[in-house]
Image (cartoon, rainbow, N blue to C red):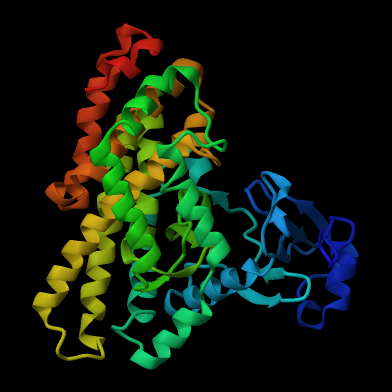
Length: 417
C-alpha cells in the first residue's frame, strides 16, 4: 500500500491550497474537480474554476490501476513522465501541455488542463478527421529525437542522461505485453473465440516469433533517443481551432532512452487499428482516404524535420550518406514496431476501443485485418523498406478479409492466407 495520500476529488482542493508551486493557478474556492482517468495506471483529476481557468493533476499509484494491488508498480514513474514533458516543452513547444511541475513526495504531476480538447483515438472512432495532426506528430518525434540524441548532445552528457532516465519497471511492462505475451499462452491475454485460429497460426509461425524477438532485442538495447514510450492515439489530445487542427502529446510515463522507430511505430500501429475500424464500419471515403494517408504523413514529417535539423549535428564526420542510411534503418524499425504494437492490442492486456467497441461480427473482421497486416509488417519489414509500402499491405489484407466475409466470422481464422 502507499505511504502517501492517494488523492480523491474531495482532497484535491486542500492539496492545491497547501502546495506553494500550485497556488494561484486556479481559484480553489470555486473549483470543480472530476477524476477522469480511463487509462491503465494512474489517477487523473481535471479541475476548472468559475472563471474557466484550469489545471490537471496526475497521480501515479503504487500499483497498476487496471489490475489492482496484486500488481505493484513504483509510483516514481511519474518522474519519467515529468522528464518526457520537459523534453517536449523544450524541443517541441506547443505540442505538449504546459507543465507546472512534479511533486516527488506525493507523486503528483501538474499540467495544463486541456479544456475542450478530445482524445485523438475517440475522435477517430467517431470518424472525425484532423488534417495536419499527423504531420505535427511526426515533427514532434523528430524534434525530440534529434535533440536528445548524439546528433545534438555531447557524448558524456548523453550517457549521463541515459543512466538517469532508466525506467526498468515500465520497460518491463512493454517487453512483456508487447513483445512476449501475445506470442505465448499468457494469463494476461484474451481474445474472442472466433480469433483462436488466427492467434494459433501466429504462435506457430517461427519466422514471426524470431522477428518479434529481434524487435524486443532492439527495444531493450538501442538507447538512441528519449522516446515517449507509449505514443498511441490515446496519448494525443486534439482540437479544431480557427488555425486548423491542433494536438498535444500527453502521458510520457514510459519515457526512456530507446530506439527511434518505437514511437513512430506506436503511432503507425494505432493508425492501423483506426483504419480497420473505419473499413468495417464503411466510413465515408473522404475520411478513409485521409486516415490512409496519416501513417505516411507522420513518417514524411519526421523525415523532413530530421533533414532540416541535420545541419546542426555535433559530429561533422557523420555525412549526408550516413543520414540516408540511418533514415532507411529507422523506417524499417518503424514498420516492425508498428506491427508489434498492433498485435498486442488485439491479443494482450490493455486493448483499444477502436476494436473493442465494434459489434461482434465487425470486431472479428477488424481484428483479423489488424493481426494479418501487423504480422506481415513484422516479417516483411526489411523487404517493404518504407512506411508507404507497409501502408499498402493494409489494403491487400482488408480486401482479402472483407472479401471472405461470406464465410462467417467463425471461419475467418481458418481463411488465413
